[in-house]
Image (cartoon, rainbow, N blue to C red; front, side, top):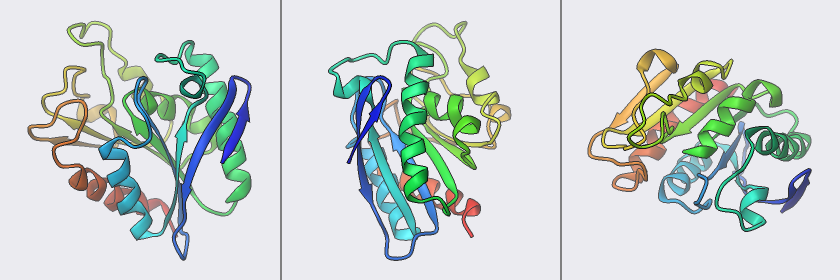
Length: 197
């Protein structure tokens, strides 16, 4: 499914369960795609629990860019995609999230798009080797509950437990969370259905 945004088209892959209880919208990191192992594992676990899962390839990636550019422009395009998805499933509670840069977008836009909660996979707390450039304010400013799942060996850092509703640290995992993606999926599915009827 293609959604036109102010920044060009975004592409959304949707998986639907037999009986939907929740809408989960996920997106990728700045240089990645929606087929990252952790995103696929979250999709599978959430689908099994009754979530419509929409994985969004953002407009900047469809345009061929490796970096999202201005946060304001990225967030504007994200809000356009979410508006379209909300119009298709208006009665389902919304949880949104993503990995790395996608987690940042989900935190920054949560209140704007009416999300009940955010799933932040491999939240990039700071650029590697630059802990003084913390992005913790994006977590704190989400305005909704945030689940953070990070590896204990992530060079982008690990957020403080006080900055999220729940922090799960995966032992032995780096930024890609690919050693045990099924466990990542389980952790997310356990948590998101607190927001479903």
